[in-house]
Length: 285
Image 1 (cartoon, rainbow, N blue to C red):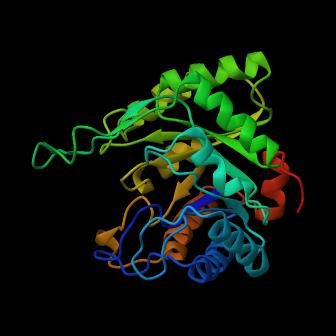
Image 2 (cartoon, rainbow, N blue to C red):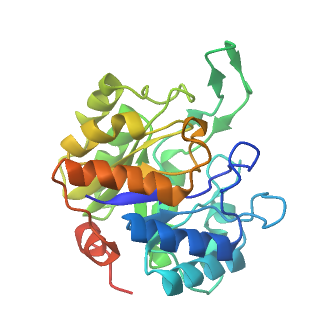
């Protein structure tokens, strides 16, 4: 089983101070996470002081290099998801000439990014449109592959999975597929973070070679760890998705350790970075 740690996303430090921001912090955190059982580290470039988004090619290259030196984890970057960027702006971090990550995301479809708080029955915003036309998705895949990076198909819905299947059938998406299934109670464009929501998505995963993981956007994936593993899915966990105040102030390595303990208790063997590269069809650095 492959564990991915979603290290920081856009998370601030008000609830949990352990979110890594700088490339150095990300590399140190990644090393602890690999020791705890993770194989893949997904990170967003962040300003080391304010935590503001940093999408520069230089920060990406520095982070990739430091993580490789620290622990050899598979590096999985962000390309400005939901930030209103056009195609050239999204791909710009991969065109700086520095060390490249091994994985980069392609969000499969256009979605509302209007977070809903069920306790107050209010939306955080009502104008959060994330546009990913078929042409943009195709351009993202082409640009990522041109940089020598493997695209990750991020499936927010059944429609996402059908689109991925069509692109594979066209020969526009490489196999084996590396993919993520997204559930969320926070973002209503996804299936809910329940067994029923997960099962509905799984029924439409394209029947092609590939490896898939489960993430819970804006929430805790821990309640779904066992059914995910039972369905031969990897698990994506980390402070980037949820600060986990119910656990105090855990680190990313603490969360990885919880998933790893559950996996081994159920008889699953964890893949380290080298074996995960083989399972995902990645080249050895």
